[in-house]
Image 1 (spheres, helix red, strand yellow):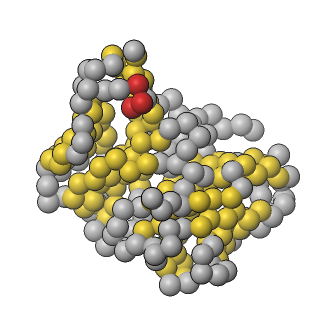
Image 2 (tube, helix red, strand yellow):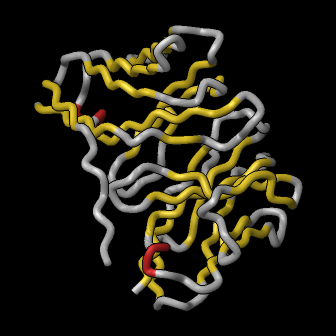
Length: 112
Length: 113
């Protein structure tokens, strides 16, 4: 029979506001974390990454925060724009591995 | 800017048929991957490939799946006898080094009827 997809959490923000998307990871051996953006019908697109020896990294309009104590990762998007509307996935990788393990994803909707 | 390409964009097949999904990784990349994403769900790792060998595979990647780099540019995923539950988006990715950023292709939507 048909499989039913997971209900992804949705974050709705007003254009111009800041967005914070959260992700919990489970593998203590993960040492590299990435945020990907996925627009409808497209593949994941790299946004920003962070290694486990850092707790914060900034890019253009985006900041990733890593809290290894509680295994939590967040993505902050400043001055959110309609073009930021997409599904956002966090992914993790172990120190000596190369496969990515993706989180469940969060839908970001930007209202104009 | 170099990018990963995949063909076809959409493949429809009957259950039990063989399908081959094709990918052209970025030209100077050495590590290649296949992931799949069932509709509405998260992206799942299938297999990684380096130096003409599988370096890691997931539980999903059973005997029905195989990968090949038939020439210097293509990287293929073959499903020997498709099942209904193989319906998904299949993404190819590549990296230059083992720990580099993974660049994803646009995906192939596989529909098994």
